[in-house]
Length: 311
Image (cartoon, rainbow, N blue to C red):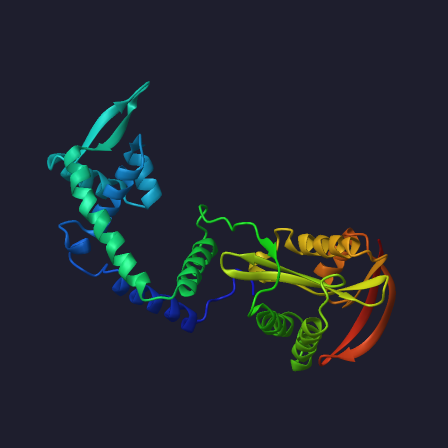
């Protein structure tokens, strides 16, 4: 889907519905935030002033997306109430630095405490795993909507954990159907490979690397024995949201290193010519294409390829 493609009304409606749900959850519809005398905007201005030093009105307005005239009136009201002071910035007489007075700090403290209590009560209803999932989903929403403060944390590569293998079969089934038109037989093949991997697993001959980020599994790769001297790289994949970070290369390099550590002399893999991104990773890692042949699998006419890397 291109960025300029029209958004369907159902998607617009779903986002609006979530906004209504969330504002109810955190009490934004109340006349005063956290049953205080301050509106949401006023409380947010107090929060920013409490957390940041040497803040000017122009920077505050830009960061919060507030109209300059509205913010100016709000700050004048705070000054009249003795909550905020202005002083000329050192070395720049044109800049006015804002700060909370002791009275402003005292007004902000119960707002901050009430917010913490309300969020703690909200999270207390969830199991620890669900809390982590919620925080990860929130971080992903912020990234998708362009929050520069929410850069995706680098993935860690770890051993498989309960639930990972079922998730990988599920995600690969969905992704390969959406991106390449593969049918259910591909997901069945992935499930069979994973079942065999667990059934025959010997850590001296096989390995698996799961890429994990704050919002869950981002990719994986498996190393399986083919003979005493040859191993096979299997099921490399990277989630769409995690692409462009070099994660496919990292997973491939981990599998290569794992094959060397286990004493294999050669690493092989089988793929299809439509998987252009994966093929590029293999070529950059030093694999060479040794065989290709047309076949019909997964509901598609494809060209299968065998690649080999001498270790």
